[in-house]
Image 1 (cartoon, one colour):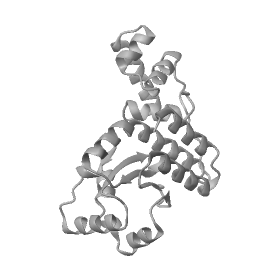
Image 2 (cartoon, one colour):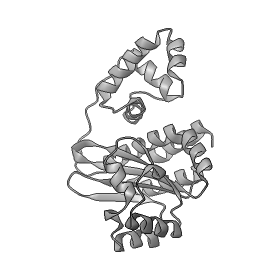
Image 3 (cartoon, helix red, strand yellow):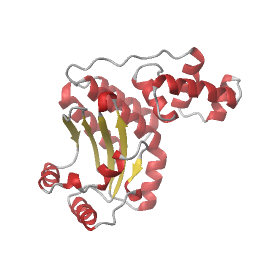
Amino acid sequence: MDRKTGLEGFIEELESAEGHDGLQSAIEALCRRYGVSHMVYHWVSGTGEQYGCGTYSDVWVARYLEQGYLRVDPVIAGCLQRFHPVDWKRLDWSGKSARTFQKDAIEHGVGNQGYSIPIRGPNGQFALFTVSHSCSDAEWAEFTERNRRDLILVAHYFNKKALELQPGRAPEPAQPLSPREVEAMTLLAVGYSRAQAAETLSISEHTLRVYIESARFKLGAMNTTHAVARALSRGLIVV
C-alpha cells in the first residue's frame, strides 16, 4: 500500500468520524487498506470506563469475555509492562493457559501474527492498538518493518480521536514548537532520515538532535516516533 495515500486516507476518514460508529467505520476501512485480518482499538480510562472497536467477530469477543481470557492474555500483560510496540512473538506464550488461549484465538480467526501498540494518555488512560494477521514469520517481519512507523502514528491519531469523544474531557495544553523544531519534526514525519533532515536544513546532526530532543520534551513524548505522532495529532506539524 502506498504510504502517503493510505495515511492521508485514514486521516480523512478519522476527521469526518462522528461518534463511536464513525470510529468503527474508520478502523474497518483502515484494516482493508492494509490488507490484514484484523485491527482493534481498546481503551480504558483512569476511572475504569472501557471502549473498544475493531474487526474481531462477535463470536470471538463473546468467547474472550466468557472464558475470562483478559486474565491470561499475554498481549495485555505484556503491553501493560511496555511503552514500545510489541510483536506478539516476543511475548511469553509458554504457560498452559496462554497456549490454550492462543490456540483458541487462531481457531476464531484472530491470526497467528500480531503487533500491538500501547498508548498512555492523560489521567491514567491506557489504550492498545492492535493489528493481527495469518502469514509466515518472514512475511510478518517484512510487513511490520515496512509499516511500523505508520501504525504508530495511526494508533496515536486514533487515540486522540477517541479521547475527543470522551464526555467532559478538557483539551490538553500544547506548548508551541519553534520554527526550527517544526521543520525538523516535519522532515522526520515525511520519512527523512536524521542525516537527510540535517542536510536539508543545512545543520549538523548534533544540532538537529538538539531540536528533536527539545520538541520531544515539549510534547511529553517517550521517543522521537512518539513525538512525531503527538505533533501530528495536535496539529503542530502538517504532512
